[in-house]
Image (cartoon, rainbow over all chains, first blue to last red; front, side, top):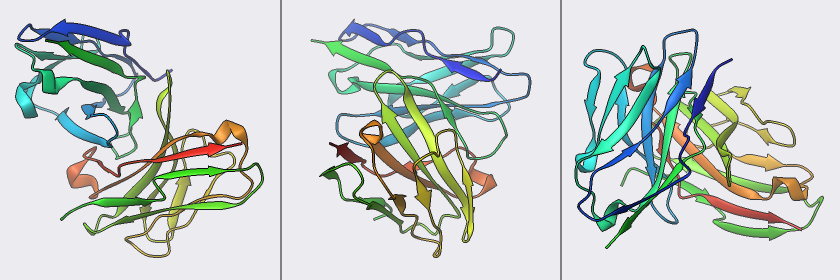
Amino acid sequence: AQSVTQLDSQVPVFEEAPVELRCNYSSSVSVYLFWYVQYPNQGLQLLLKYLSGSTLVKGINGFEAEFNKSQTSFHLRKPSVHISDTAEYFCAVSFTGANNLFFGTGTRLTVIP
Amino acid sequence: EAQVTQNPRYLITVTGKKLTVTCSQNMNHEYMSWYRQDPGLGLRQIYYSMNVEVTDKGDVPEGYKVSRKEKRNFPLILESPSPNQTSLYFCASSFGQERTGELFFGEGSRLTVL
């Protein structure tokens, strides 16, 4: 069965510390992978995406993610977080190559001053 | 300004009273979609539309209807709302295949059904 798993529902981290938000997927077909961010009381916005090519993808606001096909993972990282990074982060997968995205349950990142 | 606009942003209604949540985008996008967001469940797709007059069910379509008569509009209709449809709803749009997965979201419509 096809699925997307974000194991960590909440991640607290101190300001200027590094962070990794985990995402794993299950699929028997090739996938496209995405991270979206949702700031409080707002809609989601695209952080970064992997369609093909280099497995290390850089996004906005200093975030990056690495596609690992053997581990079926697409973890999101940032070397030094800021207070403004406090938000909910969603991993999403396209199993069909189209715009229909299947979202994970989200990880709430809280940056502590 | 490029945007996806949803109305109303907040609504409290009662069981069985038909309601429509409107969605409009000004980016000439072919693709539009509706999601609902519930705690612990993330976003689940309700319906989507690849272009005008073309709609299809997502993962949780029961109790909802949509229409796509114009490219810019994609209203979500709840014919007979029930309390289990209390949720935060998002409309999203995108270009066609050349921008796969890059969805633009509205700010959300919080619906409470009593």
